[in-house]
Length: 381
Image 1 (cartoon, rainbow, N blue to C red):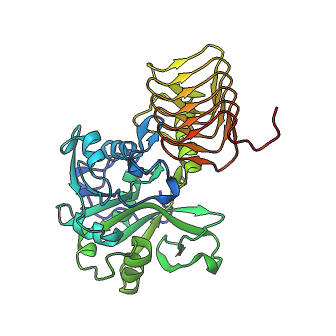
Image 2 (image 1 turned 180 degrees about the horizontal axis):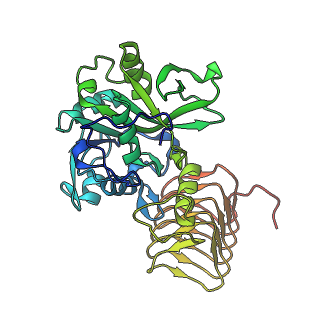
Image 3 (image 1 turned 90 degrees about the horizontal axis):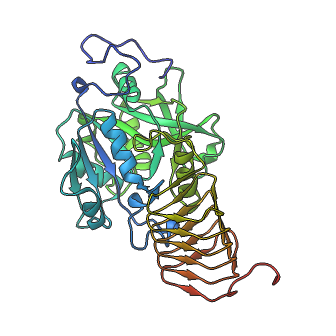
């Protein structure tokens, strides 16, 4: 909770239970999830599947997020899905996830973040809109963010996180009350550096009159315009877990953190283990599965194979003494005996022969076949 937040004014609808993580219905909040876009940095994983359906501990990124939204008490979500909508229908059905109503909004042409947000809002009726990026995972207290928003009488509230290196992200200058006073580039060397953690609360009345390039991002298009127009933008920093899934390495780390219990999820209430192995996987007694690794349905891990902090998808096969470290092995892919892969990606149905050695950063495209000993990064043994 923001330590500078004001006391709740009369009539805000805030719950008397300050420890609750459920948004009171009186606060009238619905959600938009921005779940589209081509994600080239995650290829070949996203050649056939949208990023939001990539697995974290065996469950799609988006499903973890939707369950968090439902757990927080929100009951309607608009999914902005400009890319590969059909797999989302296949996963989540015709419009609900339990008692959470889903509205699919496929785009006839790319709208950009701002355009997708504006379109989504026309399909919702709440006075406050929570906006999520589908590729961000975390454990933010959504109820706490909404309460900050109401107490501060904000037009927009941004969930922020403090980072040592903002990279190419925009940074928010924040005063002692938590109000955003400026939005600047990372070259400004602003300290401390606060960046968006991919979650926003908007007053509906603030979104509807937005007039800016629909292709612009929220951080670079919407927020600077609102700030220039005098809107009150406040921040909420609860130091919770946060990770942007923009590379295979980030996907592997987030999945391991879920299994290790570092990232809570309603779908994995009892995690805190070295591995998560599907009941229908076949794992030899002498195989070692550790570091928060996941092994999917009908996967096979042969004798003396070792899997460290990796994701082994459904139907994958690791032969004897194969070693994969911080690696994603796609569905029905095969890894040959004594092959070692470190910090890599093997696409669906790929076949990596025996005695190969694939070094950091390697990406094997789906259905590619590498012969026995076909690639090595050290001398023959």
